[in-house]
Image (tube, rainbow, N blue to C red; front, side, top):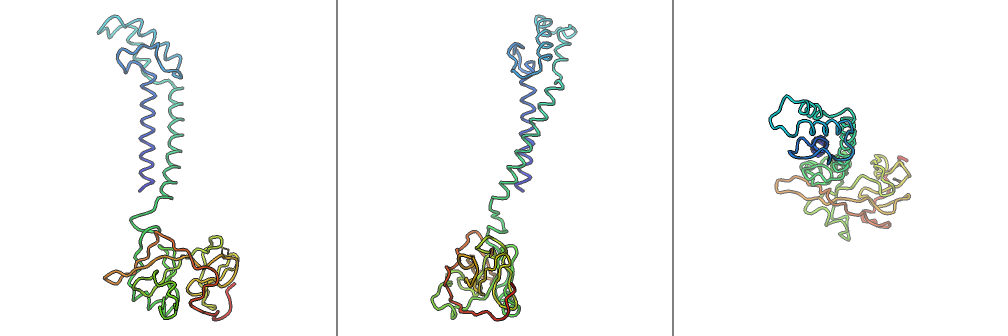
Length: 256
Ligand code: FES
């Protein structure tokens, strides 16, 4: 949508520049504008033609058949040079407009949905059952893993504020070391980053490697009709090294 808007804006700019250029180089468009005041940069031959046309036919109103008027008409046609200049300026503006539009579209938070907005992940209870049966559930739109949160395991209530009335915590899947996506390791039951070996337990708490802290996360809420909402508009910084509320040891061989 934003890209389309940027393209339309660039086209409008291009049309505006073309109109301005033609008007600037053609004083006949502005009644009474003398050729001697033509803007610099317009084609010299065109200026001469228009100046001579004005001198030859300026005194006789309605003299459509005079040589001066004929030359004026001839001068109205844009020269090849001015056409090329207009095309080049238009192409340049189009490129700048397209690049700017694409950059804006990339940086602008999508408030209608998608990453950067509040995302409906599905029915809370169904997701919880899926997590219990198959492990963390990946939600691509939120770039997150959903894991079960049990308040009884969180003795210090360190993560209670993140989950509201629900039992699901959303972990940002981006490694806090250098930004790789961290996969879930089935055998160890930890998240293990293949890039440089950082490891996190099931709640995303730091367990090893160069990462400076645990995985970042998102707030979740449960709506009145039972849907789980993941708020990706704000990234909650992960717990510092040493946090170990879950106390989960590695369950098997590492995937690294
Ligand atoms: S990016 Fe994950 S350990 Fe470096």
